[in-house]
Amino acid sequence: MFRNISLRAALLPAAAAVTALVLAGGGGHSGMDHGSGTSPGATASSSIGAYNDADVAFAQAMIPHHQQAVRMAQLAPTRAADAEVKALAEQIRAAQDPEIATMTGWLQTWQRPTAMPGHESGHQGMPGMMSDAQLAALEAASGREFDRMFSELMIAHHEGAITMAQQELAGGANPAAKELAQQIIAAQQAEIATMKALLARL
Image (cartoon, rainbow, N blue to C red; front, side, top):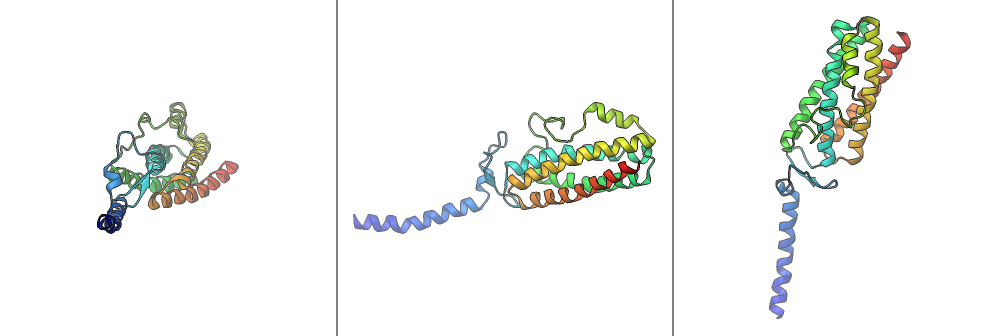
């Protein structure tokens, strides 16, 4: 009996070490059901570090959010009258295009779809997103009317992105995703201030 107890005691540290190795590695990721996702607090690992469902949701939502902002910005060169509006639109496009590529790469690494299930159109439940009617009105506008409408809609759009980024900071686990969220907050707060000044001038 004493021998069995001693053997069991000797094996316990080894079993604990194996468990620690599995948890530290990608085992949590390989066992996930990618269709339903992990539980809200669950984390897994990848080549870019640990991540959880909040990180996945952040990327899935921010991609179409950024895509709409880029679409809005692409209208400015031929429709805007104010040179500062054109410059700001190009700044937005130049910043958000690479961020879309970055977040798409994360989702591919995490083996998750780029669209949230049930949100393929990218409009539902995302703060600041324009409706189809608002986008059509912006596309039909030109000159000072476009400048004013673009600034007003983009302020609301940016405020929505900041809310989403703040949610990522509160619930996310991935260091790269949280760093991007900080960058989005800083950049878009500055652009909101610029657009508010533009509206005061227009």
